[in-house]
Amino acid sequence: METNNFTSSFSAKISGNEAVKKIGKISEWWGVTFTGSSEKQGDKFIVKMGGDSFFDFTVTELIPSKKVVWLVTDCYLPWYDDKKEWLNNRLIFDAIEIDGITKLTFTHEGLTPELACFKDCDIGWTHWIKTSLFSYFVTGKGDFNQPRSRNHLLLFVFR
Image (cartoon, rainbow, N blue to C red; front, side, top):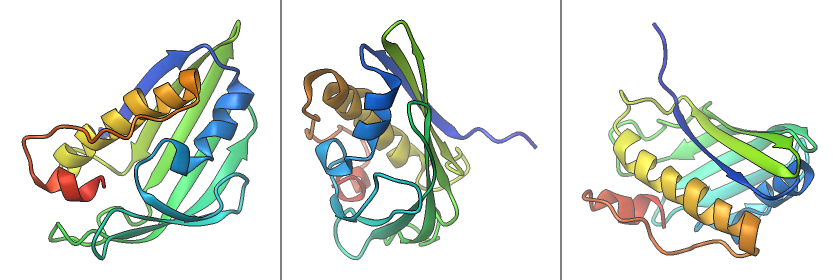
């Protein structure tokens, strides 16, 4: 059975090398509480989105100018029946630079429409990648305005 992982992409006038460096500066573009380090392979960090929620990540792959992969090594999503829904998911950032323009493709491997959190995460990731990370790439400042959702849970999930 083919999976339909969440994917989002954009292009920006930025080098692939600079893009990969900026992805690792999480607190500059993702509106979460961040502790740890995320700028080189092997780094470990924790993201909290409010309440008892947490996501432990390890940077499992980092290829300068090209790719960053984060593995979710532990998590707790109190808003859903399956509190470990992201466990062992991979967040993959692929950068392809051509003539000073980098196309960034973000894939949340394991986040599929069958999961309870998919609709909330789709809206949240679309904002954090296409709006905030894009803004950080081109202006040096992320967009921390909360994404709008018909589902009130999003206010808690992506805070």
